[in-house]
Image (cartoon, rainbow, N blue to C red; front, top):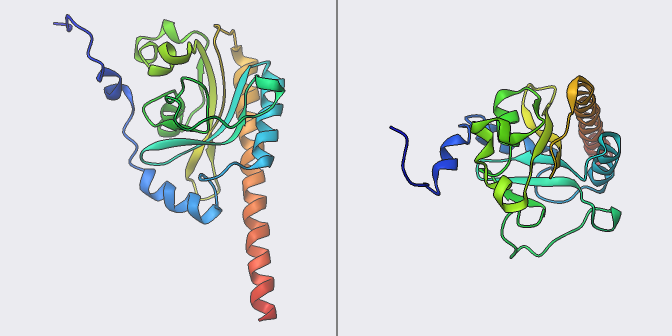
Amino acid sequence: MPPTSYDPTSHLLLTPEDTEAPRRVVRLRALGLGDAPVPEFDEFARRLAGVTSAPFAMVNFIDEHRQYFAGLYTPADGRAVELDPSVRPMARPGRVMARDHGYCPHVVVRRKALVLEDVCDYPRFAGNPVVDEIGIRSYLGAPLIDRTGMTLGTVCVVDREPRPWGRQGLETIKAMAAELVERIHRREDAGRSGREDLNAGA
């Protein structure tokens, strides 16, 4: 029989198991990602928000315990903002969010884009903490899968209103994810080339 009272930990059961997380952490560290804002990614998030007409956009890297928005766009002053780390996760959107909040962990484990035009239409997603804490009603996200086959994280947009993302939204978020993966590869190649130049000159 269904439970007769609300269990505040029930949402934890809805967060998918992520067996790839330890290897992802190693890969992210090698790329120098997931621990600090990246201005290039903030600009990418700003452009993503513009393309989709969404108020919030993120470039999100995920480890075993948390999500880190290396790229972030919010409506505040039309630019990405840093927020007091003492603020409750997702009470206002900051750079760090618990792994059991939001929908990006589902995208990472599924390795597929996720379109939620109204999260309340899906019982599995309607109980997520972000619905009550900041009123998220719609989500559009795609995985960042690099050339090693590793899912590094996601690019995503969210809104506090239901959104008819449709097929066009799905194709847009997938194309933007592919573009960002290429940028990450270029950053990696440039870093490798710089190290080789240093070694050659030693």
